[in-house]
Amino acid sequence: MTGLEPAAPQSQRDKRPPSLRQWLAPAIPGSRLMGWIGPLLVTLFAGVLRFYEVAKPRAVIFDETYYAKDAYALLKFGYERNTVKDADKLLLQHPPNYHIWADGGSFVAHPPAGKWLIAIGEWTFGMNPFGWRFSAALIGTLSVLILARVARRMTRSTLLGSAAGLLLAVDGMHLVTSRTAILDIFVMFWILAGFACLVIDRDKTRDALAAKVQATGNDSALGPFVMHWWRLAAGLCLGTAVATKWTGIYYIAAFGLMVVIWDIGARRAAGVRQPYAGGFVLDAIPAFFSMVVLSGVTYLAWWSGWIFNAGGWGRGKVSGNPITAFVQAMPRLWEYHQQMWHFHTTLTVKHDYQSWPWNWMVLKRPVAFFYTEPSGCGASKCSREVLGIGTPAIWWVSIITLLVVAGWWLVQRDWRAGATLAGFLAGWLPWFYFGFDHRTMFLFYATPMLPFMVLSIVLVIGMIVGPADALPARRVFGAAAAGAYVLIVLANFYYLYPVLAGQIIPYDAWHARMWFDSWI
Image (tube, rainbow, N blue to C red; front, side):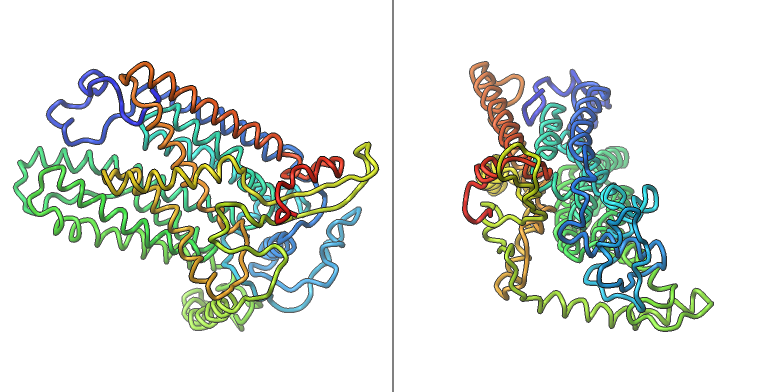
């Protein structure tokens, strides 16, 4: 099955009661086993790419200088702490020198959740490049599995779901951020996980709503109440995203509006007499608590190390009573957040690799995470780089597919198109506000948008290929076009791989991969 819609009549593939099928979410065709095998295979492939020589280069690259040490401080003290001037060099000595701490808590610009996750790798494997990059590689690998499964659910196609996972696995930006101890891959993961929970919730609650309406004969104008269990999981995921970087809050707003629209649509489809009132009263209000309030509680929980330990930036003394300590910490935490907000809104330091959101999709200015000119490549001059750049065959094509998906949503109001656009725009549009104020920003800030860019490509591939009962000529042409595109993406990724993974290559080979002067 490769089209967006199942080919067989629902009665031939759906074992659910016939009286309910007209209201239920379409069943996913094919075996459950194959629905896991395909996504797991592309996840395994992604894991090999992300873990292979992940400890190389043996260096502190780009913003690892902040997050690797902050994560280590969380392990030691529960809060971020100042370090001595040459801390990076001390950690890279043989053997490493772990005496890197200076006095006082360190002011940090981002909440601690992502750094706690980095700390898991450091706690397990030590304070070394493999240790501080382990969690990013694991999270990046798992995000491929989640996207493959959620794309399968959205398209009702195991092949399209696996294709989505494969495209994410071979995106250059996703690979680089999965092999570097920075926060953006963690933000992307928790946003994608929250989105996946909401898509599952959509299917399950539509089924539950239809069953209740059919059983009660629609005797309530508002319709029945349905418990959205998966939204609780989404609230935990999205709260963790915000606790990694504040940009996650835009997704809470976008996804909150999205689920309200879904709920009203579900009640209309089930024949509820007042679907709008029912959607707001019985769905929107509980959704606020599960997605906003629960996210807020989750956000605060990630600050526990700072709240309950003296020594953090601006924390002051800590009472021995946990309740008292929590109450005393709240005003100081608010002051801390005001300082963080001031930092983010006034950061206008010029940087060689800064870029603006209106340039991101065309990959105008990537980020050199690491660059040296070592020996050992067999040429007179060698280069070694970790370049933070997306795979052009994915990013440039997604510009077109996002426009197609936008038109599809405007014309047909297809929920899959709307959800994909919501996820993409929530990660892109807010940066325009800061861009007009000339805040310093970088291309890898677009990492959370990546899954939705890939979803747009997969949705368009499904439209081109068509369902299994489409005309044979269309199926052949569509399958050939889709296969050719995937091969182009793989070739593009393979060509760029040496400058994504920090391999030592001749300078001429490196320069040949710098397609534009702005990539240098």
